[in-house]
Amino acid sequence: MPRLRHALWIAALMLPAAAVADGREPYISWGKAGVPFERYREDSITCGAKGATRDMREQTAFKDVIHGKNFQDSALDRGDAVEYVMIYQRNFRGNVPKLQRFLVNGVEECLMGKDYAPFALTRGQAEQLSKYEKGSQDRFHYLHQLSSDPKILQAQALGIARK
Image (tube, rainbow, N blue to C red; front, side):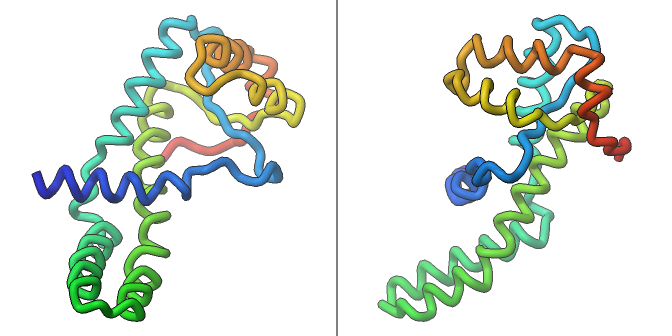
């Protein structure tokens, strides 16, 4: 149970870090020319789950965060707000993005293993995408339309090599 609590706690910390950028960063998606919608959804769910459940326990960043969490608890018990904030700066601030990258790498490795390639949406495509509610079938279908079009994939490819 403590492992699950720690994993959930770290996941909650990563939510703000996963927020969409202020619009200057391109929206990145992954596609495979001609992939049927059902396969596209199945692969995205499979790879998303694979990345989200990746074992972080041996990552130095994870150990640092857990160490900091334990020390924050004792600082809180002592009423030491300064030490509480210092622990945040030292143990969480740089490590949570590292853990997020570790999880995202798991998703990307899975997608590359299924022959998907990353591409950047144009500003117009990203604006159209933003009109669809996250998690909606319309959004999934719109992304699939882009992600399975060989012309879009070629023109907007990011050229990331297989890891």
